[in-house]
Image 1 (cartoon, rainbow, N blue to C red):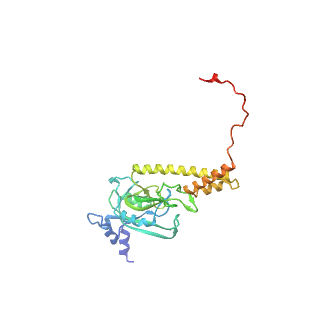
Image 2: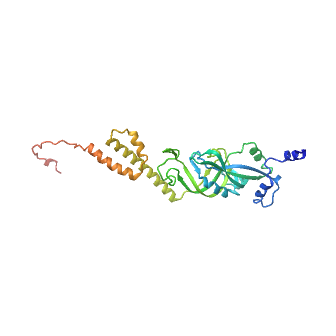
Image 3: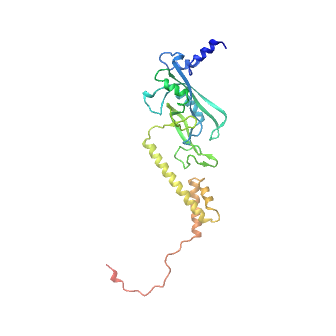
Length: 295
């Protein structure tokens, strides 16, 4: 390698985009930028792994998220202010990691984004922090059309399954499907996703959603009480089966089966434990004048 090429490369600042990358960047610039005016870097926006909140993006939705994040601003701590705008996404790609499997059992992949910011005096400290690994974790703000239970496919919060619990060997989590909008991406200290971070935003709750959530909570309490009652009746009807067995059985049943069992065990229990009269039969004594008690 010639000394001239070595010198040129050593003088080239870190993060200076190549010509092909600069072409992508200039799609978002009002005035065409030169390579030395720009600092470019890559970020892992989000992935399809189950996060700390037991939620995850469906694999198919990552590509759509990539399209939605093109041109979106990078800010800090999800504070929606124009003062915090620092960078912009100019290219995205879904990247698979062969051999890595998610907690859901499918292949791991993540959404990679390339961002740029201007080499200004105000951005010099941020560039230094990115290069030094201080500003590293990012999180995204977006919306989705559906959030469903991974066990039964019902809308999240409307079934009896609990996030983080395991049912027949399957981890329960909420799957976020059909991304509809991307708001921003932020530098954060502790992202929800272990490798990238994600902030789920579904907008403010309307009256219908609040009513549905209340009904869902009521339904969960009803099912819990129904399962407890069926287990109690089953133990009374058949003492040969340990109580913990009945408790495990009823957790796998839904309302129709539970109601049938409840009716059957109520009949069996009534036969085993017939009602006893509270008063004994006695011989009637001679009638007495009780008119003194009449008012």
